[in-house]
Amino acid sequence: MKRRAVTALAALLMLAAILAAAPARAAELRIGLAADVSSLDPHYLNIAPNIALSTHLFDTLVAVSPDGQLVPGLAISWRAVDATTWELKLRPGVKFHDGSELTADDVLFSLDRPAALVGSPGPFTSYTRQIVAKDAPDRHTVRLKTAKAYGPLPLDLSSIFIVSKRAAQYASTADFNSGKVAIGSGPYRFARFLRGDRIELVRNEHYWGDKPAWDKVSLRILTSNAPRLAALLAGDVDAIEGVPAAHIERIKADPKFRLEQKVSWRTIFWHLDQSARPSPFVTDKAGKQLPENPLRDMRVRRAISMAIDRKALTSRTMEGLAVPASNLVAPGIFGHNPALPVEKYDPDGARKLLAEAGYPDGFALILHGTNDRYINDAAVVQTTAQYLNRVGIRAQVQTMPLSIYFGRARKGEFSAALLGWGSLAGDFALRTVVGTPNPQTGWGSWNWGKYSNGMVDALVRSALSSVAPAERENAARQAAALALGEYAIVPLHHQVATWAMRKGLQYTARTDEFTFAHLFHPQ
Image (cartoon, rainbow, N blue to C red; front, side, top):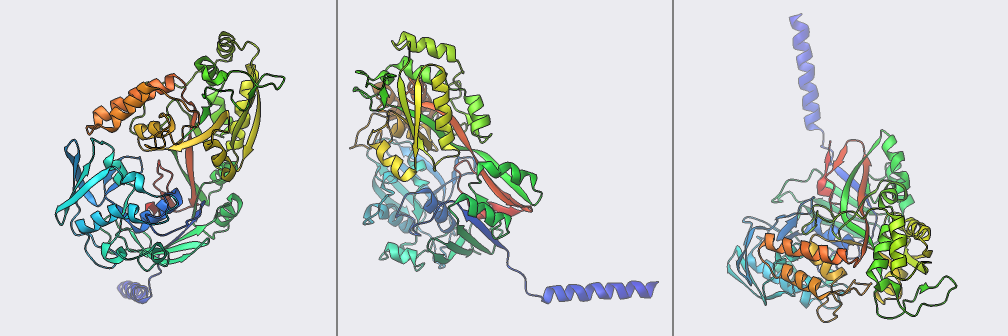
């Protein structure tokens, strides 16, 4: 008996020795992305796919948690020294991928670079223009001055990636795209960029934060829904983002896969034309243009809102991938006003309001929207039209690709236009979406309805100029209550973001819908 035990122990020791001698298999993660990455230069083009990729390679001073809260990044702390001065303390011991140490000089250089970059089609300068002076009292302290009190500066800093001054000082965007100077301090290092096909990364073994689970990451560009889903089902990728709504139940039922979902920051809403002229797609029911724009009347805008059954819209049209909205920003986002109720479905009340406004027989209206941008967007437009027809507004639908739609909508060509917006702060979103349009200041740059209220502007201005978070959020909530109370927009729903992955993986789903390889882990 004793001899058999000794023999078994020897066999186990031999097996352990064989396993120890065998080369370890690298842990690799393959992700299917729903949008293309156009550049590795983190300051070149301010679009979500590029930002998501940059976050793998580079860090920001202020980071954003999966729930949309500001948390320490390369800065371990930040504070308002006075109304126009912010001080940030840098994390000590951080190394760039080339082994050089992060210092305040790299930060100052990175904050200057967006304005110095020539030919950017979507610059990051909106996040740095508030800074009028900057200095570094020591290697790990940065002080930033603004022309006037400006509370959201830490949020702005969460969008500026810090690059190595030594590597990037004389480099071009082409040098980043070649990988030559794609040197950050992020959790992954650059390996290969095959434009339009994939980006390959390797783990940064000296990362200052939590060590990523994967030695290698391959980010595959699969912009069409069907090939992206097919790649997951065939095992060509381990996970995908932007899961097509029609296939979610199928994946749920398949034990080989699992889903992660989260209510995202993206709010879907209607812009209604409030211009003081006949609206281009509003007529009487015989097709004759109305002499006045009925959408300027708040009672008409409210009637349109009351005519929409958001509960049915989210459960049926959106197939459960949305929650009804009452705000411009999602629950949990800074400035969300929980006191605002979701509009109650009340078709009888809508008819009464239309009659009070002078339209007892309604009018005709064409609704415009995308058919390739948001979850089930064309169906959302169609569903809204059906609701409006029930209260006497003869609504028709015209949807089109994003590439055509946004340009026309921004010119004010539509009477009712669908838009989705994601933001980490209510005052930011209000400034852009309902602030009085002003090309010089950038306010109202996405205010397609041309809503304007000086009090809303003043409250948003007050919020933005407060460096006390509680005061700032209170002003933002007041502005939201006033603007939404006047139906500056008609909110519909907040989207639910979905990721699908093979069994054995888990993902920390993010409010901002970004897909980061370092947030995938083995179960």
